[in-house]
Length: 388
Ligand SMILES: CC(=O)SCCNC(=O)CCNC(=O)[C@H](O)C(C)(C)COP(=O)(O)OP(=O)(O)OC[C@H]1O[C@@H](n2cnc3c(N)ncnc32)[C@H](O)[C@@H]1OP(=O)(O)O
Ligand SMILES: N[C@@H](CCO)C(=O)O
Image (tube, rainbow, N blue to C red):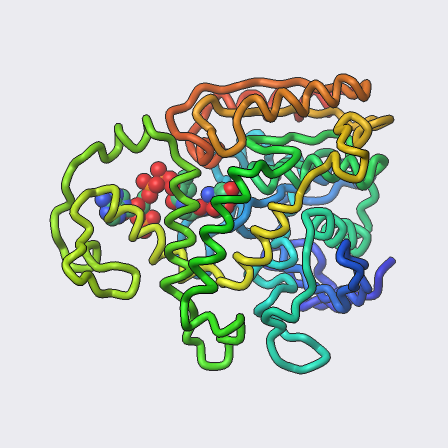
């Protein structure tokens, strides 16, 4: 087992854990990360035969606070609709783990954490990351926790990429994978939107090649614009029309200002403008611009078929994992066709796979919103596994 030091000495299980694993963690880029810091939350208890561990993987700007309030925003956990007592993922039955991905900014190793070689934040010296690296770091955490096999791994969006990667990287360590609103590769359109965001960050004079940690003067404008562009892709046209239409925004100062706090006559005239500005500005309070650069690049390079000569089925060949895929009909970021492509590949590989397309007006972010059908499917899929 990997040597480690935990921030909560001998208590490995509980809320708000942070562990420093000595590693090294070999990365796809050829470098290695050592030590590896992982911040994670757990809910419930590990049973005697260690067979009830359920890993929840978070999306691009998510975090480990899946079912507990966010320490910065104070908002409730991002998947409390799915995780909690009486919910499909239930701490009374499951031992639930959610870890902040490496590269992110909520306690796990990332550009904002300290590079042991220099004693200062890594910034752009942080090594290039892949989705597989994030998964390998999670596996390191499970080694530390003494958990060999996961009952299930569940994720939406980038969390779904990790859930899909788990059986590929660790075919003997995961019994079931639930992949929601996700993909097996990033499309040209996905990459294009991310590139707009990255350019917005790097064009911000405060970005300073990523070396902005010392004085705390962060590239807020660039990061806010990146979030605004990305947020559009998480919604649907019908949803936007229903919510805002062409309605004008009542002027109340803050909502009229742009991301620098000034308006220069270009106020947020329409409600949708004001809403997007709010999403951009509030994002800056809880996320790091360099993490955004690193994680979006990891998503862009993600292509499960690439190491298998472009044949996705080969990635899953021989897997014993059960799969369930869920897509949403208004998700144009990771559309239903992509989930179907994955299911065909799983079928061709002889894997057990089920698939449901759900109807929702909310686009990609539907997986984060109230959806009783999604809950029923997750519950049924997890319980079917428990009954075997
Ligand atoms: C797994 C993970 O990825 S975790 C990370 C996911 N979390 C996020 O991405 C957080 C930001 N994203 C969101 O808020 C997403 O829209 C969702 C899906 C999570 C929430 O959706 P909804 O509940 O429908 O919230 P909605 O999109 O309407 O946003 C509400 C916010 O917009 C604000 N808002 C609404 N209309 C306007 C407007 N016209 N002008 C300004 N602000 C507005 C609300 O006041 C509210 O602000 P608050 O969040 O500071 O309280
Ligand atoms: N809105 C979610 C989904 C993105 O894929 C997030 O910000 O992480």
